[in-house]
Length: 535
Ligand SMILES: Cc1cc2nc3c(=O)[nH]c(=O)nc-3n(C[C@H](O)[C@H](O)[C@H](O)COP(=O)(O)OP(=O)(O)OC[C@H]3O[C@@H](n4cnc5c(N)ncnc54)[C@H](O)[C@@H]3O)c2cc1C
Ligand SMILES: NC(=O)c1ccc[n+]([C@@H]2O[C@H](COP(=O)([O-])OP(=O)(O)OC[C@H]3O[C@@H](n4cnc5c(N)ncnc54)[C@H](OP(=O)(O)O)[C@@H]3O)[C@@H](O)[C@H]2O)c1
Image (cartoon, rainbow, N blue to C red):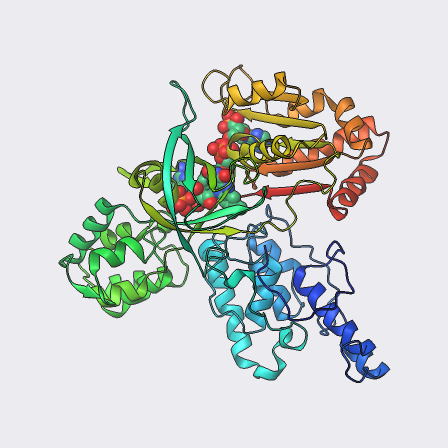
């Protein structure tokens, strides 16, 4: 989901070559310069050889063994030991390539190492662990002279691009109108998942299926007012030209208490409290409760300390947008966009905690209200170019979102390719999202196969990958016919388990050893026939 582009016009390395956007742009630039295609003097063989020690000229071999979202940060950093700084920075990212930072993991690290990105706190899934690691790696960068910044040698400076247009990146959001919400679960469900609709006509935004939608939510007013009371401040106090209440609602994150808040508390307290706050600021966990400390819980923990509202706001992290897979098709319903959002609510101690954006969409925005949004272009998650290509889509829970979009798009464009959807959730009678639509598509023959897996209908858990194994022979036949396969949904467990099932199916029905089946899946990925949108 890289936003970088280059001013170069000559493209020697094709877009589907196995390079990141940054590497491809750099290689294009290098080859154009070396061959003198831009009218300049071609590089000498020595100059070429010097630059060609690895794609960035720092001798790195380009391998990324840490690029696995299921590895903990300690293991990822170990795998990156001895690598150039930019590679260790990449290993510090959460490895989901989720695009929330506005880049993918590689390009975000290249941008920091190349000094074109100063923000070290953009990796949402990596949270505080990633931010802390980046901060400490950045200290190495600070010590290096600017000219020897690793990526400065190779990465073309980003040129004004589509990302600079309104509504095309997190840095340039645009206003859109919230239209409606509808609960997708029925009575008896343990889940709360909403179908959410927006009107994009005024914003003039379009999108393609596979893209995600970024939204800027507002904090819950109840939480904001409790925090203001804990500060002993007035909600009308002016901070940064706004009232304290507006500022806490719109501008800062009230979720995990950042290290900088504990630093502030340590500066203005003394004795044991000061020691405790200092330890928390350094990532330690003196009372075993660090993971539960959001901003309000931190203020309650240090209830005798009252930071000044201005210093307090300055110590908080900016409020980050959240991304959602788009579940509609612009070709089917131009000017409209929908999302499929699972509401995050949980309890710690006696206090109810609210996921910021999911509960904002579920209860704090009303039809007709405007909010700041942007379309985050997908990189490597799209329908096949040939509309005849069969597709296999595996999307339990909210993972169904982009696949509803794929199906609606293929119907709108009359794409003749076969479509197979694996959907799963907890219970068939209350968690079968879009059941009427999907059944109608099946009856009409557009949805060639619909395979379902209900995890809590029976005594034993039954997941989409169990269904895949059951129908492994047909799955293999589709793959042998050239089908593209897609996974969307939970990154930490589901995506890996589904990939493992795919390997098993290929080994069993494609008559291959496990190693050969793993390579087969690797080849599918390289060819863009196996794509994932996981979070
Ligand atoms: C590319 C992409 C596509 C996505 N698509 C979708 C989609 O289609 N639908 C969808 O619903 N989501 C999707 N997400 C996830 C979405 O972006 C948000 O992360 C999600 O809605 C939660 O955001 P929030 O602001 O509501 O919660 P936050 O305020 O971010 O809170 C979530 C955090 O709360 C904590 N937490 C959650 N549950 C518990 C618990 N039980 N106990 C303790 N702590 C807990 C965790 O730290 C968690 O990270 C997608 C993410 C990405 C990156
Ligand atoms: N960042 C966030 O805060 C946030 C917000 C929303 C969702 N998420 C993540 O996104 C995921 C999607 O949530 P969701 O509401 O769409 O659905 P979900 O909770 O993932 O559940 C969808 C279905 O997947 C099943 N499942 C659980 N583990 C699985 C596995 N290893 N392999 C295959 N299927 C598995 C579930 O079964 P059982 O539950 O019965 O085991 C359920 O039937 C969540 O798991 C959550 O981790 C994160």
